[in-house]
Structure formats: structure tokens, C-alpha cells
Image (tube, rainbow over all chains, first blue to last red; front, side, top):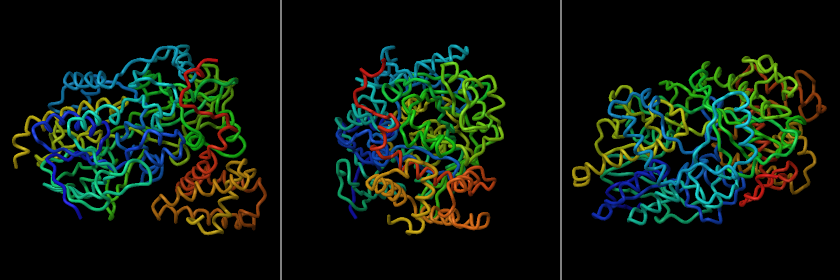
Length: 500
Length: 134
């Protein structure tokens, strides 16, 4: 077992860990030693092949198919140098003021969060893609929404030199997406921060982290030799995401004093919906996510976004099997896709816990209200598909495998609420939030408004687990803005924290 | 295939032919890839998941004896499909979720093969800028 000494250990290198590392990096010039401990691998450029199963295995926990305890949902979150920023689509939205109001975290003001968000939008080269780069899949969504009078907006994205591979969720093979692996981590390393890949943090306690280094058969070997290490650290910043951050704190024993630890998990439960056009459309060429519709956010609790997934992911999200399923899959280049995100409530019973072996277990129940939202979203999406000219629509809760355009005026009858049954339809999540929520009350929160764990001045959290409720938008910019606050707090207290 | 016993593999393949009919037409290489993908996926999952899948395949194999007097593999295509549709819509959530998981494995084994992508019209390229419009 080796021993390593640093001043600040950052656990995880995604949107939160990457931002914290870059913001704290100037301290290295004063002799402060900072290490980012990343569970995942650091891939070489040639290893971004775009092949679905291969990349899912390399870049996601459980290949993107982590199951909730009751097996009704699969969760996708990244494990790599860059965390989930390697596998998101780069859609970059700053949080609107009304959501920060709903969060109601004492000391967290929208104006402060917004200014920090703007910094990261600039740093990550966020912009609207020009019209000529938008593919048919995206344009048809906009057309359908416009014909129905639904509000539709274009997503700003953080790409530089996008070539339209559409492989964002498998790691951009063109190095175009500006995740932390392209922006914040290299900047931090240039100033002296050490990033240790293939390094799983097993437990933390005041003054040290127990870690295991294990090199998979891909990516660069870790900078540390394989095996167990004790990392002495004066400050620990946990940025492992909404499953792994609470799980790490729970198996390290912090749950006894923090009853909210792991609780109030929200997931933006998601559906992938499909409409088929009579002709081939450009769908798997071009950026996959250019537009969103928030027409129903306030009234029915869901957002709609464009999306384009890969053959296996698409196939498992269609209800049914056999010849009708195969026939739709064989029309892959005719398919228009919509992603639904339900805006789920933060409930104490929806939570991360750990089993006897310390492994995370996700308890999550889809409430009737969320199922109502998913039902309404299927009907709204079907209308958008038909308004865009689709010849038929596959609705997972439909009375039949598909609804023909001629039946478009009978959508309400053909997609009954009674068919929205957990375990029958595929529900996913890639927006995992909460579990170490911010707040002032130790009974209902885990950290203060700057990510410091209650009662532990050396321990911080800086990732989406801080969210007290769901973000109601794609969350990564907000994660970076919150991480910026955490880094600022640590910097402001560096004299006290680092001289112990 | 190391993660499932041989009798369970036979049931898996029979189920797969109903879920993705094209599985029946795979050549030796395609069948090998199909089983290898599923095997690798199961090996990477916790042992409890492997056991549950094996048990569930056993249920699919034996349960039709009560209704039809034969194991799943010995049923005709129509009856096999009826069994699977009953599982898909089953009021018992454990069976419904088990079928969903098994179906996902079969889809992974087939649609996870890059060799079948041309058949469904999926042809990703790294530089697609000249393929966006017409």
C-alpha cells in the first residue's frame, strides 16, 4: 500500500470536479498540491471509435445501464477523464431565476449563479449552431412545434469544429465537444494539478482518502501504480455525481449525522420516442440535439428535446418485439426522435443508499404525477411527429405498436394512461441530481450553500448531488457554476484549511 | 458462453428468435458475436443479475408446460410469441421487468453488432457535414 500526500483531493473530474480543479489551480503556484482522483480512464484520441457498445463500456458505469433497485429505470452516467461531460451532448443552458427561487437555498442568489454560468458559457465556446448545420431530425421537430403553436427554442451547444458525427453520447470522435476533458482539466494540469485516472476512491475520512488504482485494458495507464493507496489530504472535494458522491459519503460513515444524505434524488425520468417518415431523413448525421420545447413544463411537468440515439439504445426503448419491431428498426434512417424529460419532485424516499459491500443502490419510485407527465408527453410528441409529416408514430403506451397518420386525431384514445406501466415502458435517466442537497437545515440538507458538508469544514461537495430539487433544464452549466462557488469558498479559506 | 449454463443458452436463443426474427438468419460468425456480446454484458454485471436472468430463462422454459404441455423450445412460433407477450404485459411486475431485461439483452446482442448496421440503414461517419441536406 502506497502513501501519497496532497493538500486538496478532488474526487471526480466531470463538470463539478473539472471546474473546481481549474479554479483552484492557481493555488499550485503557491506550492499547494492538488490531485484529481478519477475513477474512469483517460482515453487516447484513436480510442473514440463511435461504436455503441464499445464506447458505452469504456465511458459509462455499467455501460450506461445502471438499474434502479426496482428495475423500472436505467441510469446513464459517465466514468472517464472528464466524467459525464465526455458523453453529454453539450447543450448549455443557464438556470432561469424561477428555478433558483424554487430551490430556496438561503444564501444562493440567481444573479450570482447566473454570472458564474455566463463565465462557463464563454469558457466552453457555447453558441448557436448555424442553420446549415442542423439536420432533418432537428428541423422537423421545430417544424412540428411551430405548426402546433408550441414554443420551441434552439439549444446553445459547446462545440468547436463540430463535424456532425452525431456521436456525442459516445464521446466525440472529433474532439469538438468542449467538456472538462478538453477545457478545464488540461488548463488545471498546465498549472500543476495532477489528474490520476483509473483511481477509485473507496472511503474518505478527515485527513485521508483510501483509493484503489486499477488500469483497464484501454486508455492511458494511471500515473500511480496499480494497488491500494492512502492519499493524505487536508481538504477533500467530492464530485462523483448524484449516485457516487452520496454513496462515497455513506460508506465513509457520514450518514449517521446527516439524515438527508442520499435522499431527495431526482432524475428527470426520460422517454425516447420515435416517429417514422415516409422518406429517409438526415438523423444520425449532424448534431443530435438542436431544439427543445418547454411549452408543457409548467402545465404538465415535462420538457421535450430533439435527440438521436444508436441502434441498441433505440431498440430497447421501443415497446414490443418481433416482426413489427424489426420493421421499424429497419427504417432507422427514416426515424425522427424526441426525448422527454419529466420534471420530478424531490422526495426523501427517492434516494441512494449503500449495500453491505458499500455499493450504491438507487431506490426510486415513479410517482403517479410523473407517470401522468410521461403520458401527456407521449401524446404531445405524437402530435409533433404528425405535424412534422411522420407517416406513423410509435408510442410506448399506445394500444397498438404504432399509430398511423390517419389516426392522428384519435391520439387521446389510442394512448391510454392505463398503459403507462413501470417495467413495461423503458424509462431512463441521464440527469441525476440531489443526494447531497444544499440547505441550511441539517435535517433536510447535507451541505451549506457553498457545498461544505455540515459540521465538516474540510469536506466539500461540488456536483449535481448538491441540487435540492431538479434543475428543470440540462444541468451541467449549473453544476459548473455551483462548483465555482465551492472553489471560491475553499480559496477564501485556504489559509485556515491548508495550514492544519 | 460462460455466464449461463447450456440449457439456458438454448432457451435464450429460442426467445431471441422471437424477439428479433433476424437472429434466426445469423451466420456462424453472427451467432458467435450475438452470444459473446450477451456473455460479456452478463459477466460485467453483478452475480445476482446473472442468477436472476438464469432463473428467469428457466421460468420461460418450463412455464409453458402448464398451459401447453411442452417446454418453450418445443412450442411453435405462434405459441412462443403468446408466452412472451403475456410476460411483457404481465400484471406481476417482477415477471414484466424480467422480460424487459431479457429483451434488452437480446437487442444488445443483435443491434450491438456493427455488422448488422447496414441492414437497418445506420451508417455513422465522423465527418458528416456533406450528408446533412440531400
